[in-house]
Length: 95
Image (cartoon, rainbow, N blue to C red; front, side, top):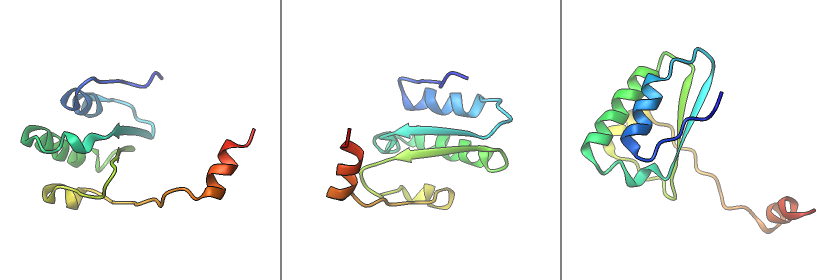
């Protein structure tokens, strides 16, 4: 299956909500934190999260900081990853 793409946050949430896949599906929203200041998008995200609770669909949102709007805290799990060490970078960059 081709990965769906969207140019704006509301369209992305619509695509996720309308996805009819019965398989395990992971949607990644990159830098979505800029969008959740918009009340319409925040409400839509909460709505979509509620609908996905009983499916095999997951939304992962990448952000530079673990700041989450209060309204979304009950629907989210925050996982913070440390910055890579020099050794980690060396392992990745070895040819």
